[in-house]
Image (cartoon, rainbow, N blue to C red; front, side):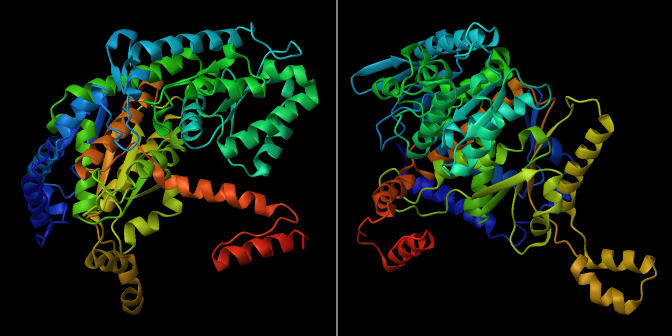
Amino acid sequence: MQNTSILDEAWLRLAALAARPDAAAIRPLFAADPERARRFTASLDDLTIDLSKTSIDGEALVALLDLAHEAGVKEFRRRLFAGAAVNVTEGRAAMHMALRAPAGAGLRAVLPGGTDDASVLAAAERDRMRDFVGRVHDGTLRGATGERFDTVLNIGIGGSDLGPRMAAEALTLAHGAKLRARFLSNVDGHGFAALARELDPARTLVLVASKTFTTLETMENARAARAWVARALGEPAVAAHFAALSTNLAAVAAFGIEPARVFGFRDWVGGRFSLWSPVGLSVALAAGWDSFQAMLDGGWAMDQHFRDADFAANLPVLLALLEVWHSTVMGHRNRCVLAYDDRLRRFPAYLQQLEMESNGKSVTLDGRPVRRSTCPVVFGEPGTDAQHSFMQLVHQGPQVIPVDFLLAATPDHDRQAAHLALAANAFAQAEALLRGRTESEVRAEMAAADLPPAVIDAVAPHRVFAGDRPSTTILFRRLDAFTLGRLIALYEHKVAVLGAIWAINSFDQWGVELGKVLAGGILPELAEGAAPRPHDGSTVGLIARFKQLRGEA
């Protein structure tokens, strides 16, 4: 139970620290403390996080740790791992950790009428997945024509697409895939049309990922894929070419998928935390079971670290406190994620859902309006691509945008010169954000190049970099499946800690519901000859113009 007055005092202490004239300065902190880089770096084995290029000093860190204590993060962590209903608006536990834990880990989810042994249930479904993957890979399970599958097509959206898509790409780009993985999420028919031209239905295994088997976009795309297979191979072929990641057995059976090809998970697994569940079946089929299991093991390693480590050395807690300092205290409303690894090109998109759907909330757990800003906007691209697009804004724009840099020390290719160039760029970008460039430095450089004084006067202001722009660097030995699992779980737990500090529910997503409801009402209106329904003037006009452009009255 939080003591509101003491918690308010913790926030006031942080506000006072942020109000100091030099609160945003980073360079003086290094000048004052030669050991700063060491003291503001934390590690879990090879996974290393350098927080020193931020404006957090020793006093601010103590105040942030006090805030975590007063906000009840330790008790929240205990309740999370005890399977309590931390998702208060839906009365559910958030026990995704059980999906990657050993069967004997003892993680239980509290239910209205008892408990689930979440570890045992997850392990049993994992065994079914492993058997299915093995039979596909060894050719025991084949398509209707007797050909082996060479492609897995995952049809889902949101958490049923972003996580598997990101992980499959990360784990197969360097070493190739056992099966090609293709993903279909957008209901826009152009996406499936492109896939249908590329894929051979006789060699394609289709996974339909929808817990309820009612998600509009997913089911529209699933019906298109079903018709594609049936048209090419005959109606009886559907059973041989489809599997479902769902709990709606009746709807799955009506679709034509056999119970043995249905893999489910419980309500204590939220969509954006479901990569570790049967939703990750496409990853296991593409990368192999050993890689999928190693990813689970990496996630479980981070779970144990988060559960057991003191806050001062706890990587998810430290990342969360840094976000509080930047977003809530200092008012930075954006964060950039730059993975200097092409295999992680989908990682920023994955984090967008994980962070913004989880913590993009404006009411607290007790239903009151939030008193402080919560989740920032998350965006990013791979380095070095980003250096030639939006990094101009990050370096010289008027707003301060903290950056997360991610980099592996050892690549999985033999072009060492290319990797060293990549690493040099990552370190240089972080150093440039910190150091900046003063006008006197610019003028001296231009004068040394013998440029006329008039040119120097005109151009020098445009070449100034403010510096003192914060960044965090996350280093690891190599990007293997175990490391990927640790990284994903690191950010998952960061999100949960932030929810506890901001007193919001990180595990619901009511903000996506209204649009779904309204779309269901508008869809019948778009049929030719359908009568319009009451809307605002703009929506009425747009629907009318849309139908006019389609040649309808």
